[in-house]
Amino acid sequence: MAKPSGTINVAMAEAHPAADAPAPLDLLAFSHPACLDHDPGLGHPESPARLAAVIDALNAALPGLPWRDAPQALRSQLARVHSTRLIADLLDRRVTDHHRIDADTVMSPHSHEAALRAAGAGIAAVDAIMAGECRRAFCAVRPPGHHASIDTAMGFCLFNSIAVTAAHGLDGHGLTRIAIADFDVHHGNGSQDIFENDPRVLYLSSHQAPLYPGTGFREDRGVGNIFNAQLPPRSGSSAFREAWANALLPAIDQFRPQLLLISAGFDGHRLEPLADLNLDTADYTWLSQQLRQCAERHAEARLISMLEGGYSLTALRECVVAHVRALI
Image (cartoon, rainbow, N blue to C red; front, side, top):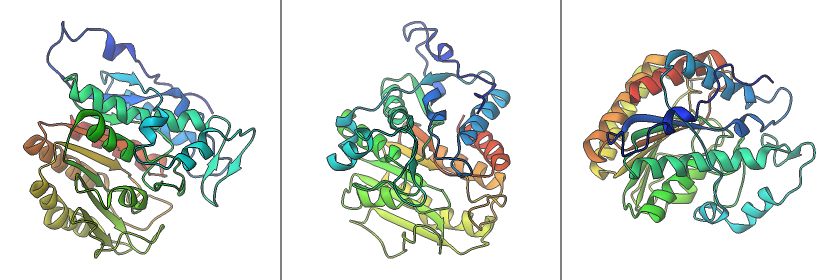
């Protein structure tokens, strides 16, 4: 696959030391070419073309957007949310062609680094925000992560990058209240699994039900920190916006997070081949604006969004640009 025509310009964000530009950037974008090299195989919906489309679209629509290379996450950082067995199984496995973890989840020879860079993007974003270099960040990475649980890689996901990001905010920077807003069309069962007994993390999800992975019930409450809004197939804008406006956004306001994280999946769009919601780009713009305002009210504007699903390239290009514009 050809690399994105709009290359990631790391120097743009690093050209001026903090001493010369004390005002934080509105938004930093993080990615890495290694994330393009994870190849689940011909015909797999979670293809490198997804990230190529995202980077090209952002570079075309927002040519001044500053980019940084994502570092590799450390094993010790992964171990905050994942078992040592899962970490060793994924990182120590020698893959020469393709290794199928389950029917949907496949590793290729370069998947190790891609997964480490995806998690590392969130870690670097937390560090940049807490250092005052930027207010918000968008992590254009793959593989996605929110299905990966404490000890299981599944649903296209190897490591749970948004969970690693949250744990770094907690354990690396001493934050005590972090919220994860997940609007992917699939429930983030891994994120719920990791944090359902940790009152420092609020997890909120709107998702189609029934749909893979068959989790995320309204009665799931964890220790009072889990909020799920199930949307029937063919739900549209009104049901989606009502769920967020009447239940999920008020829960964020009540929690008053010090950092707001977003699992940004755009597979609820009406063009999506793997699901049956009827959302459009305007819905993602609306919710992105609402979440940005939550972060401004409670978290000194601190917000990190991480790419999850979205398998129509047309919808993905349009929605990611709208999302990032709304965050800026």
